Image 1: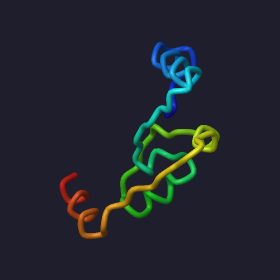
Image 2 (image 1 turned 120 degrees about the horizontal axis):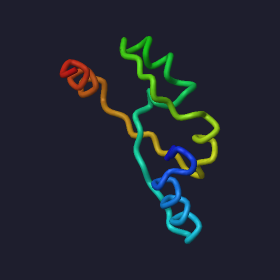
Image 3 (image 1 turned 90 degrees about the horizontal axis):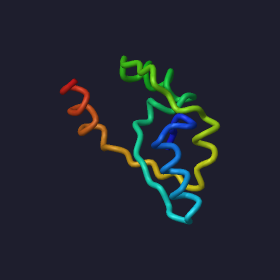
Image 4 (image 1 turned 135 degrees about the vertical axis):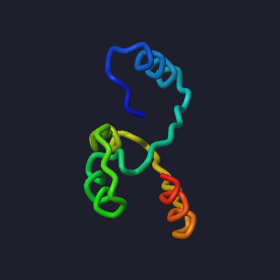
Length: 79
């Protein structure tokens, strides 16, 4: 989870982590800084809001959940 340092959300998340409570979040892969251009080439969609790779690198676990190609095509058709 990328939170702007010093914000209320950042402080809350920090307190949870300090208390030993795991924090889970979801992101679309195009928001990962180093993958943004690759995803834009494939999908034709560019996003400006990216999460720095350094933040992703601090995550102890990352689980990629993918859609089958036909479901992905259907999702893109709806945009």
